[in-house]
Every structure is written in structure tokens, then in C-alpha cells.
Length: 350
Image 1 (cartoon, helix red, strand yellow):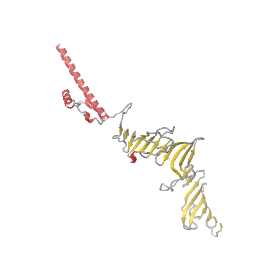
Image 2 (cartoon, one colour):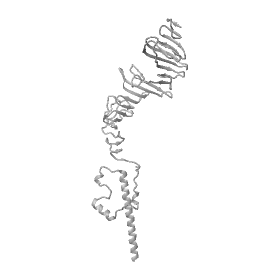
Image 3 (tube, helix red, strand yellow):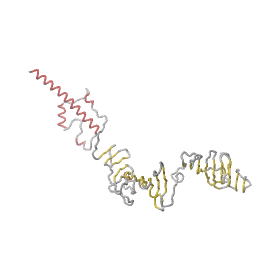
Image 4 (cartoon, one colour):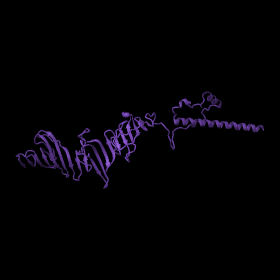
């Protein structure tokens, strides 16, 4: 049937391009004619095409197609879809959540990202509510009246900022949005009052060779125009090769500490020296030991003091000391035997 046309291409058509099709899909279309019961379509005339459809499962969908020639096949770009159970999707007819957005773009821009825009003065974002009253969470992009979202992105509940992302760095809790002066990274502080200190976690010297943990040496105020000062000496660094330094920027081992370590217990592995008690172990005589000490002013195998100024390996040095203790034990046992032998000889003379 047609109104304004003598050659309708659908079950019902108004004018040249408005069609109403009744197949497995019910479609109200503009510049489209359904050519199969599955909803395949062609353009009626040159130009764009659009449609509102209803599928056999109770879903409603909106779609559009790019510019094309008359009688050319239509590839629909699916827009909004509302399923029978109330789930809503964009870009797919299989929503897995109450609201599902899906894209197949290969870039990081307009073809893949959702946009929430507010042209007013209060920014744009989302409000999340779960569990009842006073449980709101807000995600806001804020900025100036003429450049919304240019300044910061804020996670907050009620009027309290919990986490703020800025173009220069990342800040947590509070109202001061200072730049990271040593490197680009994290700035953490607690907004208890206007006189508190912060911490910066940043890439070392802007080249990323290490992550530095640096305290501020001036208080972090609530005035965004005030730039806090951070120490030039980080208290801890973690390098790209897995080394950790405390009070030093240049760790030379897996853990380098410039200062005193206090611990309840330190465990070392493989520091035993049981080989000293093996029957094949060569224990030099007390006379040889005496000569060595007079010549070298140290025990055999022990490095000279000049070589230990830069430190010693705790595991290897502990094993060396245990070796000397066990050698000393053997000397004591041998000496005890000789004393008892002498005592026996003295008793026999009497």
C-alpha cells in the first residue's frame, strides 16, 4: 500500500522514502526498503538511511547508514537498542548490563569513547548511588567556564574530594593542586587542615629510570595557587632493574640503605661451615697460625681492613666467622687432649 506513490516497495509507504515493513523485523524506515525477512535492506534513492525497528524478541532498536547510491545495500550502524528486559545498549543488540556501550573503533578518540558534556559552569560527570541515602559518589570533570574539563577530574562524595586527577599529576584528598616539580607522578596528602605535609611519588628526573618517594618540606595549604616545596633527596627510590634505595638515589644492590637498620630478626641462607669438622679438612698448626698472624696481622682467609671499608657481605662474612669459631673449637679440643696427657704423665712420676 502506498500514499503519495504508485510503486510502494514496502508493506506500507508514504511518499518516496518513508516505509513501514512487516517481516520478522518490524521496521519504520527512511530511504530504505527491506529485501528479506531477516531485515536486509537497500536504499530507495541516493542519500543516507535510517530506521526504527522492533525484533521478534521484543527489542526496539535505532540505526542509521552512511550516504550511498540508490538500490545499494545498506550496512546499518546500530545506535540505541532496548531489550525486552529493560537493558539498554549502544553498539550491540546483546546488552550484558543495565546499560552497555560497545564500539569496534581502533583509535582513542571519537569512535571509541563516550562523551558527557556540560556547557554550563559546574563541570560534567556521573553520579553513582548504591545502598541508600548519603551514599552518593560523583565523578566530575571540572574547569573554567569556557574550557570545561581542562583542569581536573575528581572522585568525590558529597563535598569531599577523595581522588583528583590533573593534567600534570595525580592528587589525593584536599584542595591544593600543585605541579610535581621533580617529576610527573602522584601527590598524596590528607586534607585535615590547612597546615599539613604531603608526599610525591614521581618518575626520577623526568626520565623514568626510577620512582622516587619524596616528602614535602613545606606545608600543603588549601590555596591552589601555592606551590609546595619538595625535598631534593627522596627517602626511597625503586629503579627499573628492581633495586631499592632508602635515603639514597643510587642503590648499588637489590636493597641499599644509607643509615641504620633495626630489625627483630634477619634470616640468612647457606651460612654453615660444617666442612671444618670433616676428617679431610686441613687445620694448620698453632705454630703456622702464629707465623701468619705476625706476618699479616689478621687471621687466614679474613680480608684486610682496607678491603672492608665499603662493607662486607653479611652472609659470606657470617660463614667465615663461623669457620674461624669451629677452627678455634678444634684447637681447644686438641689443647685439652695435650693437657690431659701431661697431667697423666705427671701423676705417673709421682
